Image 1 (cartoon, rainbow, N blue to C red):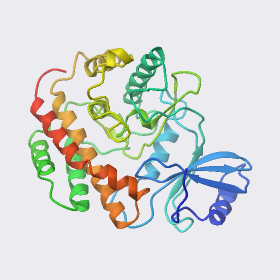
Image 2: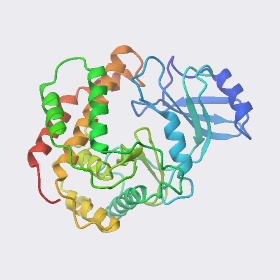
Image 3: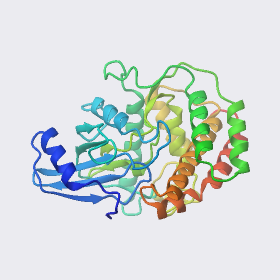
Length: 347
């Protein structure tokens, strides 16, 4: 963990929590998690126990980005459901306290994995963890929106039309140079939006292994993290985002499974994971999966372009890491075009 000049003022934070978080007592030690490039996240070690604080980054932000208020709402709504989430404690929308909105949640003990190859585990554990990832994803998409108070968590209409328009605007607002492949991908997606099929579920928006916490002594998922991009939308976007991640190079940067002998490691092939998801959700298959993959490559490219802009402007969570990650935007654009060429057909 690291600390920097943008960390919240401890005195102001402690005073506010003392007035608004039942049972809280200081003093507080604040440690910043050195991961993630969107909403800065901290572990709070207080006399009353350990907590986690997640805030909007300081500085001028793109419209609708870094919505910690939405993160708080959806996780609070999911408490007690089949989707494991941390317990939400308190939300502060008063930006004068620490300079931006933030929320505090319970600290959840668990294991996090950055590498989908899971090199620190055995074969049987890998098999079980991937089954659990599949189960949790299906559970997210099976949430009863009305019963959980989330019926208004996203607008009606074609999710992909809305998302392509939104992320194109975000990309243009953070553009620092012309990337021809990104422009081509945007044009292709714009012309190939699938017709509305009536599927309308909760979607996480960034579902991947490094946004999940697993039990310290087993494969059970104990918390799904980073709900910033969650909304009501189309479930195949979450599934395709996971498959997209696996198509990236392995290692610290790509965090993918490209070129890996998955059978030897006990990891599912893309189609096997998709088939497992379809079995859990009552589907016979997913036609035209190439579109959903292309969309996810585009969206991640747009997100990383925003990271680049924030890093250059000096308000990224970790500017050095942010610039390094953002250098992959052309690779995501190329991956999206490759997925588009795969085109149509049953998956």
